[in-house]
Length: 363
Image 1 (spheres, helix red, strand yellow):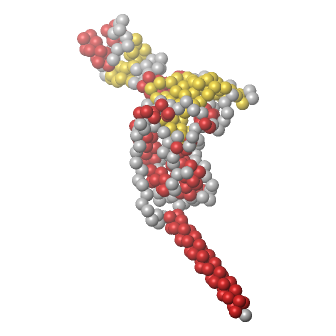
Image 2 (cartoon, rainbow, N blue to C red; image 1 turned 30 degrees about the vertical axis):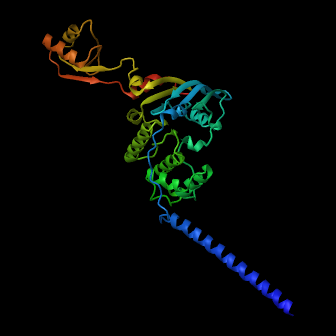
Image 3 (cartoon, rainbow, N blue to C red; image 1 turned 180 degrees about the vertical axis):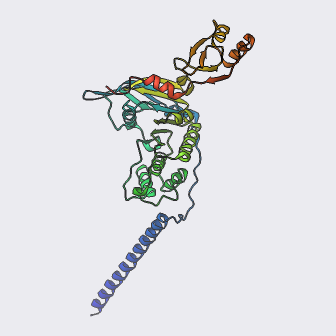
């Protein structure tokens, strides 16, 4: 009888211990769940998050950010989407990637990010193919078209999943949300995001690993003027730290403000590459001066041998070969009245149209 009571007591003790341990596990889980719900509802976490800090790229690391595309070719049956394309993108600069619809821009970026296998040629980042990069999210951030996420998932949780996949602290999600101005919207579901908000979320995802290289396809699509200026300032600041920024866009006026260098392709081939100034200045007429005067013949005689004078459509003439000051001095010496004298600098839109005219479609 005594042994039975003793056995029963031991059994009861085991049951009580199990209940206590189970209760503690349940309580700990509840606390973790409450913390997660609190953070999802906008309650700050217990420990303060590290604020975003700029991280200049060390000089010795800059070559790891160089993008080199060499003889890159992609055929889809009888379609040559990209045809022997070669160019380089340098660290510390914003490079605009331009071309008409169907020129092969997105296909090129997809091959660069390892999403499409090239038919021939290569595309490397720091001399390495994207698929061979160690910790790719920490080396390259890419956004192709608008950001995509599970429609029922919040923006914050979308970024936290990326953190988990890359072995990054979850707090990094909040840092990049703050950087792109989505902290207040971090707990809204993705399906509730506007196009502009999705673009910002995509940039946040690209920056999650603090990468040295950014590759963005139409990042300002859907942004209002304030958002476009914000994007411009952000990308220029990142390039100033030594990062490589490659941006495709159809907004030529914005590229003129944002980019240091340009790569223009047409029909899958390189049409032009260089600084914004050099590409814009590649126009046949280059810079010219608009002149309105009642004595065009006298002005032409005064400038004979030094300049070319081309009549306009509304009584004006366009002068190339000399600048506005020389035109004004020559007119004054000859006693010719000048009603208007305006220097016209070459602009990117005109250069783009001239370089891509007749080459819009892939073959």
